[in-house]
Image (tube, rainbow, N blue to C red; front, top):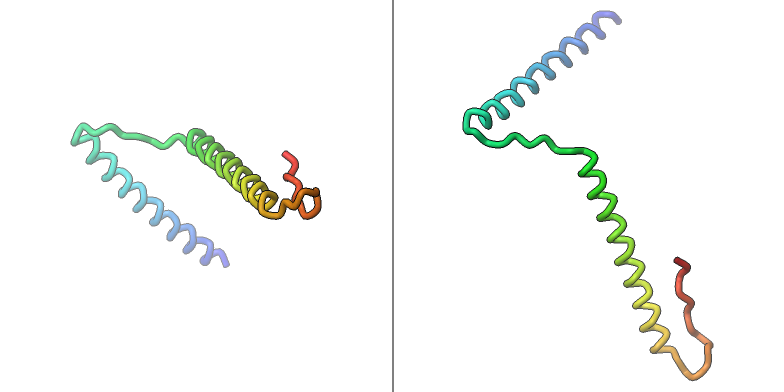
Length: 89
């Protein structure tokens, strides 16, 4: 069992060393070419994702309200029968 753990640890170490080498080559070539190295900001990415989701929800709610309005116009017969209510906000 200990031999299995040792083999897994060795394989994982080799993979991490290889990835470090690849990242080093990538960023090293950028430094040599005087390119700006940008490290993504996870907080900014998450906040953009949250804003995008809020915008999608708002657009979905507006589309639903518009659909209800059109349906209510089509089914209007002078009374309130057959009219759908708007979803609560």
